[in-house]
Length: 429
Image 1 (tube, helix red, strand yellow):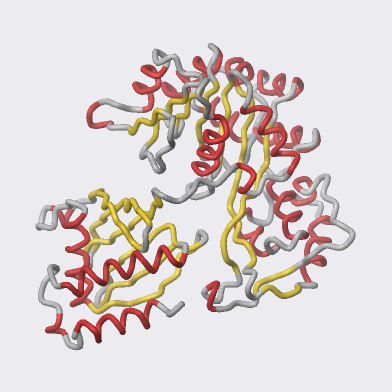
Image 2 (cartoon, rainbow, N blue to C red):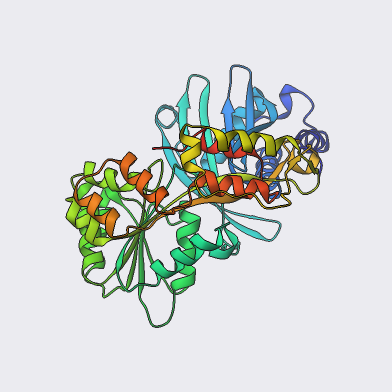
């Protein structure tokens, strides 16, 4: 694939844009073609986001690919400014002085190469102009199945059992961009049936699922997670997805729903699975309600996968892992139960045009699943700290994200450096 710089230069020449006088306004056909090029290139590169960022003298074009930003182009200011105005106009955002002085959100329906896209725009005013962050959502892309996300077999079996229960509260935790929404959509895809009613509350709805009642929040009109969840309880639903637990009112209603015959899925931002318990306590939820309703907590991160086009052997990886296993710190705890295969496949990517010289192409999940057993529920009732719950869960057999990551390294899926970049040196509580 040609580089974005090469495609940009080719477009300038073919459009006759060779001087500063070449672009006179945002209606110039070149500007619209450039916008189409930027989005199309992002789709081909597998980017989740496109960033257009003004500096003193040019516009920086960056793409988030496999979780990391890559600067692939710089456009002159005389092209940057009409480009920003044209994109904001297409998204029905204000471009006057008032509009340029406040954050705005918008969306654009976009078609390219037979793909139907939903572009979600966020405009943010800076000293040198509006920064545009554009999320690229593929409406027509097939959803991943749970089996394709990277679950280790034991966690897949445990999670599959929990989600098929008739009631309970199931949380997926992790930072923004860690795959929580993708995992929950895959879960709903697995559970949906003509015989059950599934209702979701989302902010925003990222993918439309056939046969599921999906609602998008509108806080300006009073339609919040809490008000929507109350209404869902009158909808005779079997399965409820709440996009995020943000306040005590929402979690109280969610727990009540889980205790009265619904299975409720939602997300939290916590470092590891056990941290969800203390987070709920901090929000004001009584421990006995958490212990009674919580079916399980899935924590996850996304690591980049080694590029298959430039994969080479990495003999140093095993030595690094062996040093980690001998460590007396947090790594020793979080690697409890780790056994390397007799013939591990340690690899790394050399870097090639296919992976933008990064050595990685695509991503896979790292997981840990907190399954509250009797002794853990008792500790929850005693308001045990996250550290104590974490140690008890690991000693009871919970596979940690670090252990899952190192096992994937031994399978040749990713690298030690990538696992440690995502998780840090230790995932101890």
